[in-house]
Length: 267
Image 1 (cartoon, rainbow, N blue to C red):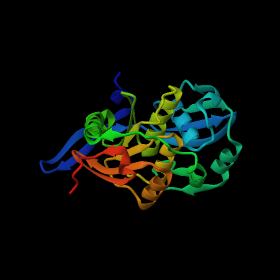
Image 2: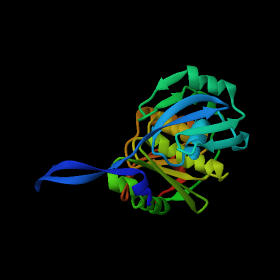
Image 3: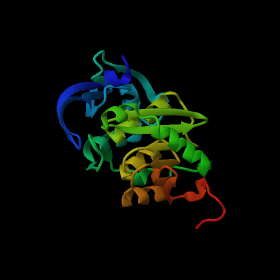
Image 4: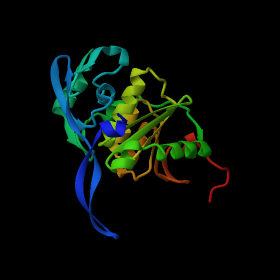
């Protein structure tokens, strides 16, 4: 069974287009409610694709600062049905308190919850000196655009690809924040050095997306879509290179362009 077959269903539809009206079938993404348990207590549930649940849980908890180091995780298990993830770990009590009591309803789809602690990581983050040529970024973008199995079949997923140390990781999910948490969680579990990496994502770059990347020390974030004003402000404050509308050979660099090696002559 392929990944597309595993995570989709086929449903009968009536299709209306320029060719007329016809009975046919459509490929639809499957979503499930996954529960996350930390040290024996259920802390959150999220709607997502039933794939890479362990990476998702680790990425989310480290994005929120609840777990600060991958070595703090003592044990992680996923139930046989894939609907429950159990983690035992040393946690940051202050940030777990924020997760429960000091939340902001964000613009992210699905869960869309982010603890209010942007100011707490400004001093922590980013002395990285990563540099990439424009040509290299365009190669990464081409690979990103040509590798979207679930999206090409359903039109219903977001994607995140992480390029680091001549390696790459990728994830697709119904939520862009889920896709980011999954790919960064996988990098963390592999103990990859991503301090000189590039993360390319689909969907808008809002504040919470930028903060996720800051929490994982990713210095360059690129999207094929737009960014928000708070996304730009957060990236500027945190030292992240933020690039939007990256399609074909086009892109807008919003912050910290020093990491991108540009032609000497600019228009």
